[in-house]
Length: 249
Image 1: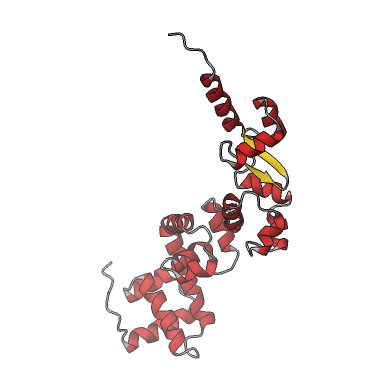
Image 2: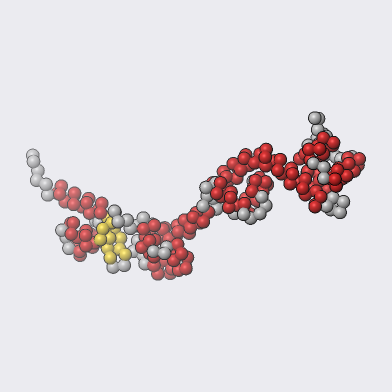
């Protein structure tokens, strides 16, 4: 069928269109009678309803738009869905409003509808957990602060304005110890107590503390407690064994 591409409608065509729309004639039949594409007809009907809502009420025109959107969903739905999934993976914290305002807005509404619940399905399709991402972003200032201030206490975080108490307790129910582990400062396999370091090195706790203060042993202080890197202790022992190994030459 040779469909007309021109946008102008003759009065006779509009009269025919109005009569057929009021009868509820399907888009496919309108396409044949007017020799225009279904998309062009649907767009024209929406335009007419905006210009003259009395003659072209949306109650009559709306179903044609929905019918056309269904055609698009059936024909291009998977392609548009892939675009939305790709967008969300690049912008995992994007809200529905941000997506709608982007260049993918009409694709989103076509695939997921205009209701607010569509964003949940879109995130599920993209395997995006926005809440988890936001939690991780909120934790980042705490991690940075604790890595720079290894001996900092809980109150120090609050005094420095890093995070409020309520938010901290929601993110770290295990308290500052959980926060330190999250920041990579306290791992059972990597750090030992000052007392254990003293035993392994055969030194007093005071001597271990002095080595820590002089930078000879790596570690950090949690309140009054000292934690030393197990690797640092092993390195110290190795260096000491080399120092006292008799020469065989």
